[in-house]
Length: 128
Image (cartoon, rainbow, N blue to C red):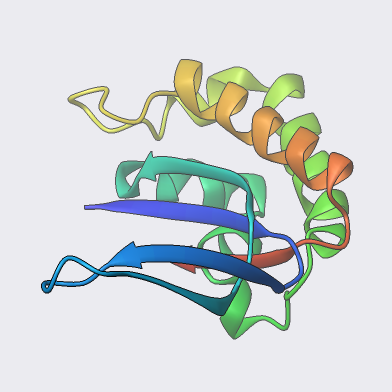
C-alpha cells in the first residue's frame, strides 16, 4: 500500500479526437486538469511523518482543510527542518525492513515542498 500525492492545475477545455468502432474519427471537447506534480511513497513512512508533524497535512490533507499547495509549504518546511535537525529520531522509527527509510523520505518531502513552492495555487489531491 502507498500514498499517491498530486498537484493539479486549473481545469481547462481540451480538444480530443478519437476513432470509434465503426472506424470514423470524431472530435469532442472535455474538461481536464493538468497534472503538475505526482509522487508516491509507502505507508511505512507514516511513523516518520507523524514524528515530523506532517502526517495530517501530507497523508490526510482532505480531512484537514488543505486544498491548495500553498497550504502545505509551511508544514513541510517545519517537518523537513525537524528531520534535518535530528535524523536519529526519525531513523529510530523507520520500519525494520527499511521499506520507507529516512534516507528516502527526507528527499521525497523536499521534492514535494519544491513542487508546492513552484505551484502554490495547484489543487492538492491524495490517494491512499
